[in-house]
Image 1 (cartoon, rainbow, N blue to C red):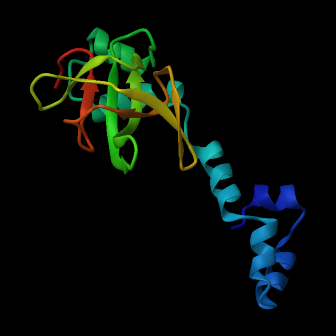
Image 2: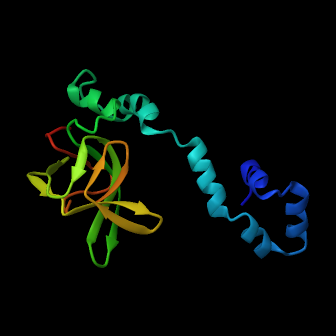
Length: 169
């Protein structure tokens, strides 16, 4: 994987890349500029931070009352507001069971919280909260708004569920 920032960082130019490619030295090319580094550079450069992105995103993805405190909390990435967590993926861990991963739009996720899962009756209790560090999940005490969190204990959640501290659509 190559990009202009990776070439600047490694001192490589297009001639070097073409030479390695044409001489079947792809392993050396990989060692000098791993795809994972290039993708990480692109994510850091182009993936907007939540404080800038959420004021634009929330009105597009949420159909609730745009003038409510809940909407304002999501747009401001308010870690002290009501919890709103959108599940984007469910994965299985052999030790922890189902892990729901998604964006915390507002509030702060903490172990032991009882939260509503959209479209289901009752509440689910969070067993653990964490952050993914590559493929490894690191358990933490709390995950505030603006972060991508991993949560166990949301037995009723599916990808696309909204999990919240207040009942909402």
